[in-house]
Image (cartoon, rainbow, N blue to C red; front, side, top):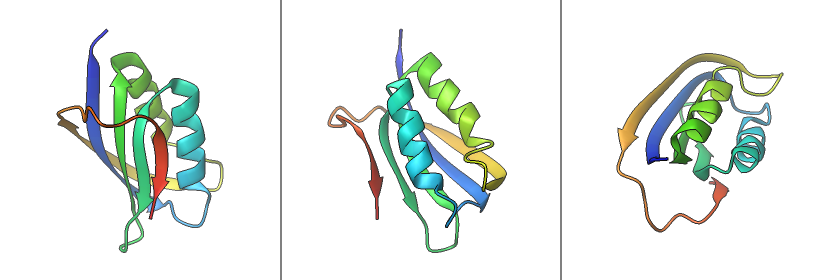
Length: 92
């Protein structure tokens, strides 16, 4: 299976609703590497990297997020995988 990477922007009510922690938990379930962080404009950015099907499942999950979230849009851009990533983390 091919390794893929995407830089993702999630818009909507995605801060203050456990979005980052839930994304981190879901990424670990799927075996996806990367990070997630809040942006000053109220949106969330993430880097998703791993086996194609696992990244696709996490990307699909981002469209709904945790129960308290209201996701308006998920935009993803393909990127070159980062060979230094070893886990999935929450960044400030």
